[in-house]
Image 1 (tube, rainbow, N blue to C red):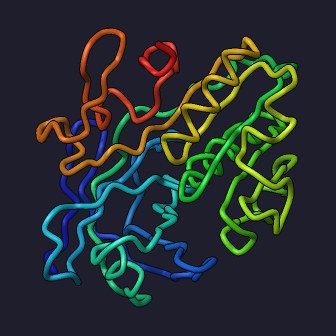
Image 2 (image 1 turned 90 degrees about the vertical axis):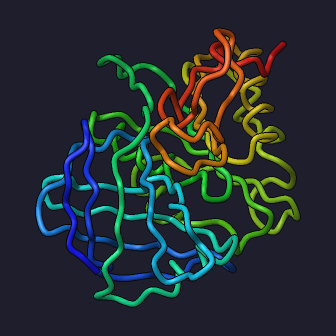
Length: 266
C-alpha cells in the first residue's frame, strides 16, 4: 500500500497502523490506530471515512465515528459493528496492518461555555455510544461529570461500560431487561426529569424519541445523525437530510445538529 498523508482543508488522508483490535459483544470491535505523526484536532462527534482494502466487493469508504482521539500522539480508536462485507473485512484486520483514513470530517458537538452547574445527559445506542464516549471525555477534561444513558438489545450488546463509568454516572436500558431498566431509552426516568443539555447518537427512531423528550423537558438537544455516506465531502449527496432551511449534506453540515434545525418535531 502506498504511504499517504496528504493534506485537505482541516483534515488529512493518512495511512494508520492498526495497533490492536479488541472484540466487543456479539458483533463489535474496537480498533486502536496510530499514525506516524500528529493528527489534526478532533472534535467529539466528528468521523472518519475508512478505506476498505481487504474486501473485493467494497468500493466506497465507510463512515465511522471517532471514539477516542489523541491528536498530538496520532492515535484514535474506532468502534466498528459488523454490518456487511466492508466492516467484516475491517474487523478481520491484524495488528500491523495499514488502514487508510480521511479525517476528521463533519461538525461535532457543542459544549457548555464554562458553566459547570449545567446537568448533561448523553444518550447512546449501538455504535452510537462511540461519539458519546468522545464527548464524555471532552466534558470530563473540562471538569464536568456527565450522566450517560446507554441502551442495547441485551446485556452482551452494552459496550465500553468501564470507560463510561470512569468519567460519569451510567444508566442502562435493555430491550429484554437483562441489564438495567427493561425497554427503550425513553422508558428510563432520566428522560422524565429536569436536565439542561441532552446529546444523543444511535438509531434514528431512538434519536427522534429522545429529541421529543428533550423538547418536553425544555432541554437543549443535539443529535448525531447516521445517514448513509459515500464520500464524506458533500459531493455524492447520498446523506442529504431535510432541515428547516432545506436539504443539507449530513457529512458537511453535520453529523451533529441541534434538533431545532431538523424537521422531526413537525
